[in-house]
Length: 147
Image 1 (cartoon, rainbow, N blue to C red):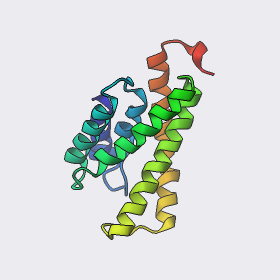
Image 2: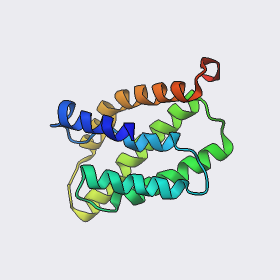
Image 3: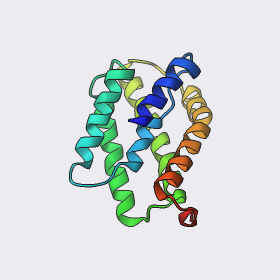
Image 4: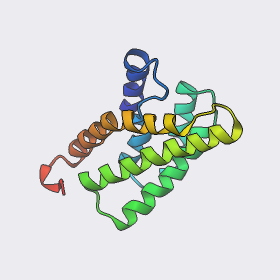
């Protein structure tokens, strides 16, 4: 829930004129406990994100589920560490933007060119990496699990 508040602050006060928003809510998927209801939680988070930030109802619900499957698969074979969270976060950010780029261009909702796609990745990756590091450290509560 904090991620949605941070996204709201970012949208309303910091990045109102930017092409895309910060990805705090999306990246919080990494930190949701993986259990039997994980995909339901991720889907509802995506729907909630759509209701607040976009007019594309269900789009983010399904994108969040796809990314949720990636998170489940990744942590099935990898340990939960800050480095792994960073790697997964970067993959999620690129995959999310790539999915939106493809969907928007195929449906002609919002035609983006590849330069805009790279601009989005380049300019929004730093703040989101900081977010992942801070949440990973807070969640781990010990710095010796950094590697």
